[in-house]
Amino acid sequence: MKRLEREHSAFFHTYKRIPLDIERGRGMELVTSGGKRYLDMFSGLAVNALGYGNPAVVAAIRKQAGLYTHVSNYYLQEPQIRLAELLVRRTGLPRVFFCNSGTEAVEGAIKIVRRWGSLNGKAEIVSFTNSFHGRTMGALSLMDRPRYREGFGPFLEDFRVAPFDDPAGLQHAVNRKTAAVVLEVIQGEGGIRPISEAFASALKQLQTQHGFLLVADEIQSGVGRTGSFFAFERYGLRPDIVVIAKPIGGGLPLGAILGGPAVARILEPGMHGTTFGGNPVACAAGIAVLAEIDRKKLMTHAAAMGHLLLSELRTLATEFPTLVRDVRGAGLMAGMELSVECEPAVVAMRDRGILINGTDRTVLRFLPPLIVQAIHIKRTVKALREVLGEMAARKS
Image (cartoon, rainbow, N blue to C red; front, top):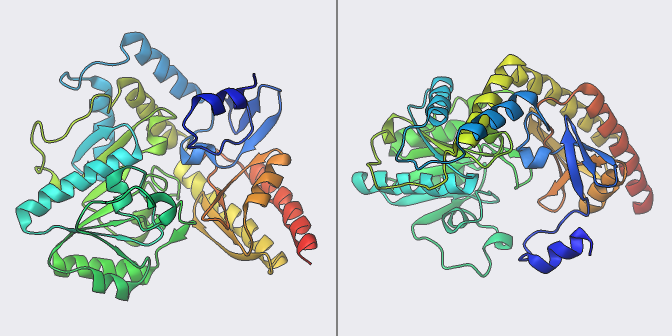
């Protein structure tokens, strides 16, 4: 029985599997059991920031696994403490809570907001249309997309969804009862949509006026992907809570909640916890990830390669004006919105040995490892030019 058949017979059918039987990865490439090589331009959905098989990450994992792979969070663990110290020093946010994933970080952030709100006479949480924060019940309560919510209600109370990147809509949504606003400054699953400077300015003014917390979801955009450590830095925002995951564990399950002064003393022992969160092997990998980002100056590199990628994609947009509606993003988080469904283009690129991802039905999403080079971008754009040319010919 083939692996795809075995998978189909054993799993809940929650994934539309790509028919690639992956055997190993190295650098920018994935290799199938049949020996075919693929250039990975979405890096496990922004997880593999250093590509595959980074020697420093592999060495850190091996060393810690040889010491211990898990002990209770009742005990002091150097990998946890060291990684927390690095994140505090880098971000200026004084408190860290480690968990296992992005959606778990969102759930914990909601609890912190609720606890803070109960002490300050505020209950409502405002989020935005077309956002994506995970698939657990709290995360779904923040979202308005039927694709993820239908059939899973009722959801949590006192959640309000405002129009994304709409200053007037935000002003209408928040008030003195607002405990927090939860925001992706660049929507990922929602189609690589950044907020505008006008929206960021309105958000800062309204936060001062009403005194709510700002929660930044940097699960996909954080840890260097946009050319800065966090995407919100580009707008001068100062969140009270930041949630991260994806790249921080070097490919292992790890998420984190970073808390600012307003919430630093909100949680007391027993109010929140996790069995596996802050796994020492994952934290050791995370320490190596941050060290490699610094050592190789990957944030500067991401900014430069992102500029090249967006420039090349915009050139394609001028060449295929009837097919390409928009190109947007920041750093190595880029999206090309098509006038048609994007899945055929994703498949055609895969047939050419290049892995990209489609989201929001019509958007080609590019999330390459931060180690991507110009040669990889040029190869991707060359193949995409061929694909768009074929699509345009069929459309005419």
